[in-house]
Image (cartoon, rainbow, N blue to C red):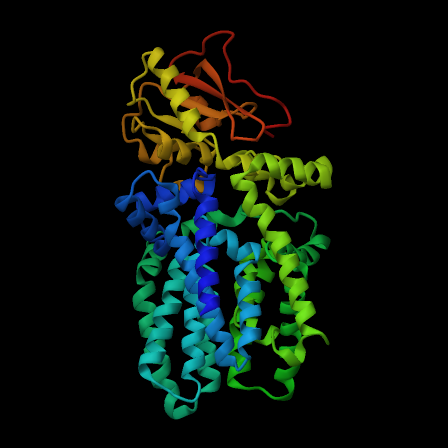
Length: 516
């Protein structure tokens, strides 16, 4: 079929775009977590990353191949979900194209990201649920449970979607079928998600609690609802988001008039996600558009019903697809050609847009991921291998063996150095509770502590007090730039920290404002 050929071409294009692009800070963290696998978070994608690294170590494009294949599976599933809804073939193709070319799906199915796996697993659960309408089957209910359990193993938000599917079964099935369906669904889901459930219970839900600052960007309550509604524009185009919101509103109206199993399947999981993340947004200021977008996957076919599209659907869909590509492709191309993206951004929007990135990161997290502009964010995907090699040359000249550990409060440095450093130097995070049981220096380095350690951070970043108390002697070894092709250099300071009285006149450098 021509559309399958087009899907194949798009997949090869993605692989070409990511080839040669180094791991970003989150990607490096996901890779490292996969090498030290546990079930506290995203067990499914991290297991795939671990397997890919085992099969072909040191290859970024092969490491990302699992995400790319998830994108292929998701596109096929969204097409068949629309077909099962009764949409004509041409409209299904438009809906699939809008899905696959949205920045949200394009990025998360090109790079290492839990969303790519969550979307594929949840779409599988939805497709099985649609098949079960009118043809009850224990195998289908168990399959829904397996898919929902895999969604939970992909990302915490999968639990809200799985709960919505549980309530759908409870609300729509006749009494004679309900108990069997709920048992099959729940048992299969719990068995698959058991590693996550056990890990959270055994750690007292430590990691979800420590993620409380993530995307906590709206300190003023008055801005929280507008930002909650508009933040998805960073991930999907305005026309596509309008279609999805419109479908949600019309489905709520139709639910009041004539509820149906198909309509409840689209709405109940959506409501669970929107209520949960609406609470986080309104009461905690945590706002990120891709957290709520999975809620609309069940509504996708409803958004593209021909009768509910504008008067000239072909023209509208063409415009929507064009706007979506204009929204997604520059960001996708920017990571491969950052200089082109930076020059285009400056020409079109100037420095104000570039500097707006800092408002999307909470004040606390700016210490942990110190990029202060979109161009610096793009620059996170390059220059790590060269910096790691330069650093090891300096350390070899200083006579510091690979056994001396490298520490940083900026997790991107720690995980990128762990991936690109050729000497196997141990790397640890400091003062970042999210990685307490993974790479925290005081938890993972053993006892007694090393006699000396290396401290690496972006110039201007403060040394954590917990580290300064143990290693009060600070010797600046070198200042190293990290330059991604086409991006401005970032300067890093490398210090040797030792116990004992401070050396007079030697201190950790700090630039006011940049590290604050």
